[in-house]
Length: 306
Image (tube, rainbow, N blue to C red; front, side, top):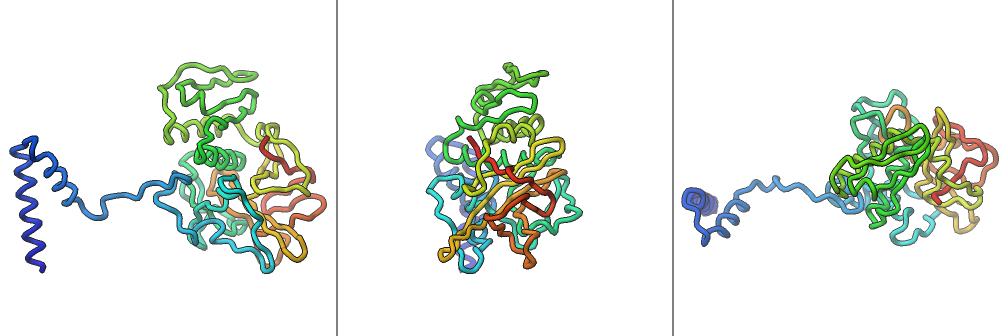
């Protein structure tokens, strides 16, 4: 059997050499087939997941946010509409259990006890994708994944709406003392690589101050997946409601929070410091401020995308 495989490979190699040395139109297809057969099996890379394009290959259910983080006993996940932001957030890929939170420079975060689990999404190699930036990244990635790229737009801190549609047409935003002007500065390009460059420009000129003004306040009683707890300012902070569960018997609801922080670092699911068991689930019925491991949000900090 081994000799048969060797002979086949040798014969194919001879045909390939013949194709290269004496190319003919009639043998073009055979040449292509020979090259493909001689490629190493591991040469092909998995195609990126269309819903999570930074991630190569499909995400296994067990490695998603919903697969990794089970509801507390007696709770079940609140229904999320197909194609909704909530459903997309539940499918986010996660790094292996116990993975450390890494900074943009590849070094581990000095104190990472706040993290219950780490998302498998890149942070870039610059100190840009911080707290509000991570939230804008997730929102923009979702809109692009569900063919709603026309809705991708964020405000710069000094005012002015910067939308991806104009960027994709080759225009570039120029911050002014008040607002933004646009100029021709690039070629038409709506690719994923261009989208990521757009986001870097957003990170550089937007933050909690601008995002706080973009979002609208909602009462805590109406909290939903995709909402944001935010304190705009210099410094400020923001965390994203990534999932929700409900107790069928009592009606009690709980939620998960995702954050990045300063300096730019891996997005991660936060532990709840108010609970002794290290759970990541926060009780939705509370009064006063929201205590997270690295920030306290005053009452009235819950906001939603318009």
